[in-house]
Length: 282
Image 1 (cartoon, helix red, strand yellow):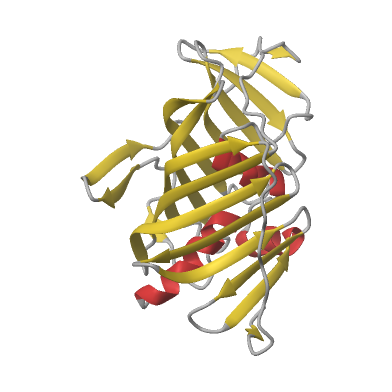
Image 2: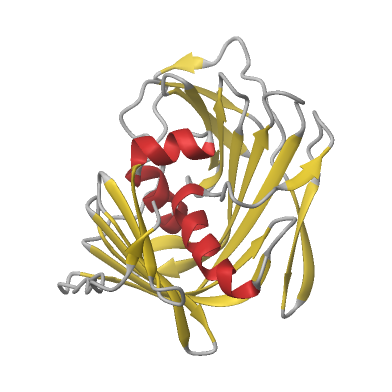
């Protein structure tokens, strides 16, 4: 796929962690391979989080105080890398603004040229393809069906800031040498949250759609002090999607690296419009 299309793929990745128009990198079934992302420092290999079964004595509703980031507004300048079998992009520029729990605004591009911009509300995702003068608009229900994993605003916000996406869901808690493992049943999706024993930060998240076995893995790293919080300046996201006929698994990967982050009380603007000459693709 031509590189200029990758800006829209990256935008969709931020929303849905995959793009059905591109084939994923094919893996052997039932494996958990390492993921390699190439950046200016060279390849970095990061192992996929292991599958962990909950001990039978896991405590229902056990109290674990998770250290989360609270903010009225979030602003960041970031770099993003995207990789699939058919397309990849390294070190694209990504600007993000969030009004907590209500709006996510972003634009993505490279070499000073905007490739795509987007606006996400609680219900709707809109992405404008600036290079091709077109746009797409989806509900979260449509995106969830399209990408084979349950998607919502809270999950996307969590990917960016590193908070648990399912705060009010019932939980079971177990412990291993490094983590508290909080398991949550969200109906058709089973979520394991890996909370650091020492800092109580969300370090990893694994979400499995029970019907399809499609799996979303998040890994947070490079935690640094930000105001009164610890903030993960790096996020690695993978989506493993199974072909329902062959059983083969296809993988897509994204790495998000924040360069400058601000948590502020100052009201932010979210400029967004769609020129009348732009055509709607979806």
